[in-house]
Length: 112
Image 1: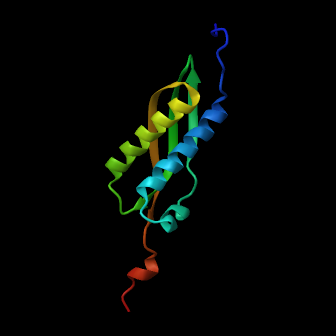
Image 2: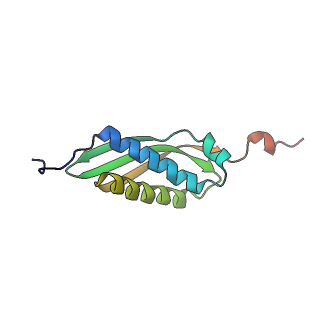
Image 3: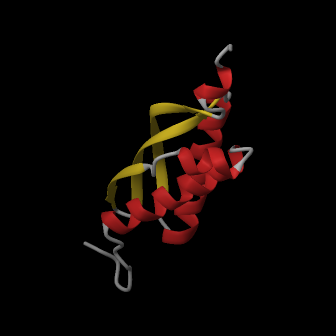
């Protein structure tokens, strides 16, 4: 039974907030805006209930990057941001790295 006065936030809305938070986190990890604009928008899935949520994010990361550190930072930022904006307790944020996007175009690496 839901608490009286408790607001239920649809999973779709929580997913949008998570996507935005992931984009913000990646923007702080990316040295140039050119690299950030090459990254496809993240995708999020949410399993929520009883004031808690588990989040799954599929995203691209810039390359080169320390994946372990960057992943932890994205998870922490998304956890804090979604919790702050929704009032939910985020129990888990899983990341699936879909693709690494080179910071420099391959054309700059050719030997002529």
